[in-house]
Image: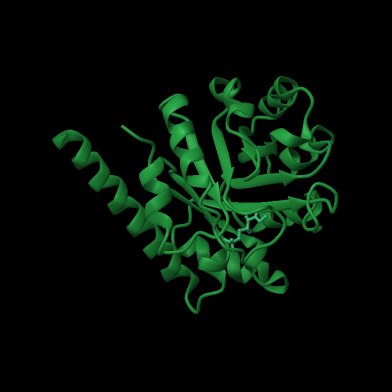
Length: 232
Ligand SMILES: O=C(CO)[C@@H](O)[C@H](O)COP(=O)(O)O
């Protein structure tokens, strides 16, 4: 039995002057997670959100925060982000940014947050395989991180499939970058169950409806897959 589908709305494509309104709107639509892209201008060519804004977001919602650290030296900021999220959510670090993954995994766990491990499109899955039994989620990037609105890179598909094969059943597999109603079925078929979307939610005229239809397509795909497996 696979983990259920969760949609994680990336506020990178939301209107930053209206975070409260945007967040209330996706909350009303039943969003599962709020994805927060933290970028430092070093690991990725963009600078975004720090703990101060995350604390502000936490004041307006109780939805779990899905904090994606695209920063060098992520261990230096774990406690600040966990505190800002009030321990409710998950912190994901990039394997490319740490020398000792076990250390940061324990550090994140000690804050009460769940732990995610991520890899860029150019990084092989083998780099994270030894840590899968220690984390709650693996995040496969399907764009080179830095910006919303990029095109999905299909190299993510075999990586998701390999992770689904190697990972413990209860581990979530997240995919992030270029997800649309047209390709969400492909990533779910390969084994992803936590789907990040920014443009496909916030760049539409009705973000609430966009969330519901992404979730519906993903859930129907997962159900069909389960039926196919039984009938095989
Ligand atoms: O981490 C990132 C980009 O680096 C993502 O979370 C983007 O925010 C996804 O944006 P879309 O591709 O869905 O527009």
